Length: 349
Ligand SMILES: C[S@@+](CC[C@H](N)C(=O)[O-])C[C@H]1O[C@@H](n2cnc3c(N)ncnc32)[C@H](O)[C@@H]1O
Image (tube, rainbow, N blue to C red; front, top):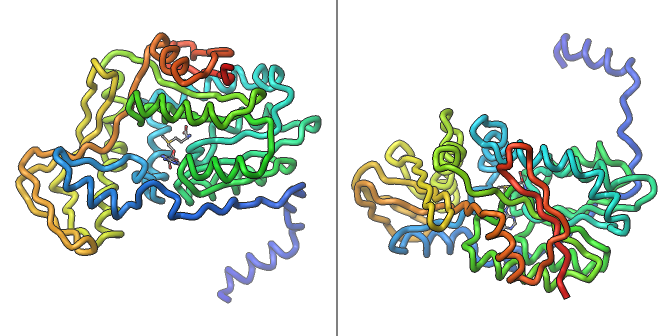
């Protein structure tokens, strides 16, 4: 041990160690068979890059780097979504907790590191209410980061994280037979689904809910093109790095040879469908080899890979979508600038 290290170690030995809070429950990671996922990264890349036009599913953004970049995006001045949703959550969480005294479990779809969820946990996790929290996310690194923080901040809370896709994670959590539940789907992640797929997924959620369960969804509203395109194409280029990281992931996991300098991030708001569409565009004609998949992909100059849709809705569209899925609105809250909605639903009988 070097001298400075020895001195530091002697100092820390004299200092009484700050003891972590005593936890009532050990965190129990819920095991989900990875083969339960809809499609592997390998199969998605194989199919998507052979498609015309080329596509890659947005849920593969979230490897460790992608999850870290997403957290950076949440801090960007242009990315108003996180601030607007946090503003609502902080304002209404105490009311929500008071209005739902029977809820015993929060289940969060695509929790990431659950920073925003803290407002709800603060309100629901009280001495009077035994509470479990089950975050479900495909990103191990984001979940681990969130769990570590929650273990320190919420010593009473039972934490049941699942590294899984929404459907398979939810099935395992339901099998525990805990509840009544408040399902959370924040961050306007519903926008990543096509409208018909969003209705089908909401109907699936509805089918898993008991009468006393509730569903809280954060949904971004339609607004002017400039604000939307800036939110997904920021001036510091963080969103561009987030999008292009998909190519880095392909290079690493599938022995690809994408040269990132030969591709760029593109965003377009398609007003009729209300979707902000993200693309990776080839700067020139080129061929890329994917050694693990045993094939080459040809790109023309300007050819795009469609990587994400972020659908925006009007309040009327939200009502139509959710009503078709068998959900009844309990309450809706907006941020002060009326950019974003937080919607609480019950299963309609
Ligand atoms: C847009 S981020 C939102 C994170 C957080 N809920 C928030 O509002 O800041 C989407 C999160 O959902 C996760 N995710 C995306 N698709 C998923 C899927 N099909 N199943 C499970 N998690 C998914 C991602 O890993 C990511 O952490």
